[in-house]
Image (cartoon, rainbow, N blue to C red; front, side, top):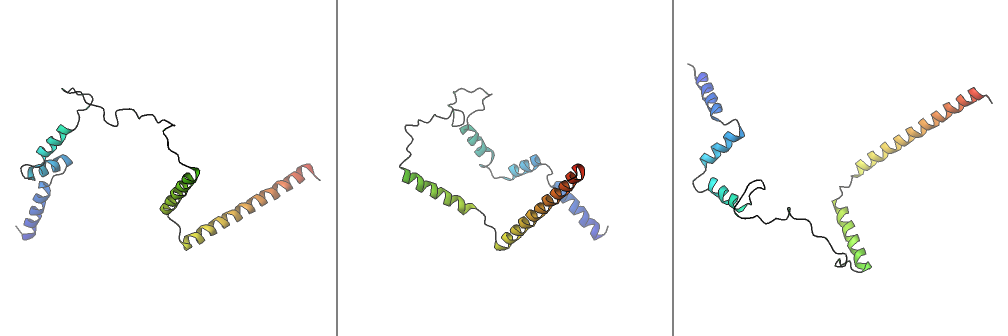
Length: 144
């Protein structure tokens, strides 16, 4: 056999030994991990988690944040502050939102403005043309 044929066989054998599915890759990674990591750490983490609702367990599971209803707010306890402090908070929040805005460049603004002006001119011409056509049509039908 030629050298190229042997190289092709080596490549093919390397490709076939590579896992194709995600499950096969996980299994290969798990077997490559040193002892003391991986499955033992995962099982310790699984013990900390509460059992799913459909499964029975010895201890009753206390409801976590998502399982219990949201507590009701009392309007009396709501500390609104003075009108001045509310206005200052509003301005601060507006300023924070404006910092998030992606402002257009000068070139983009010129482009957008040109597109809008051309569109408005087209619509004005279209309405004027239709108005003229309908006026002539009414004059033709009713004759003046």
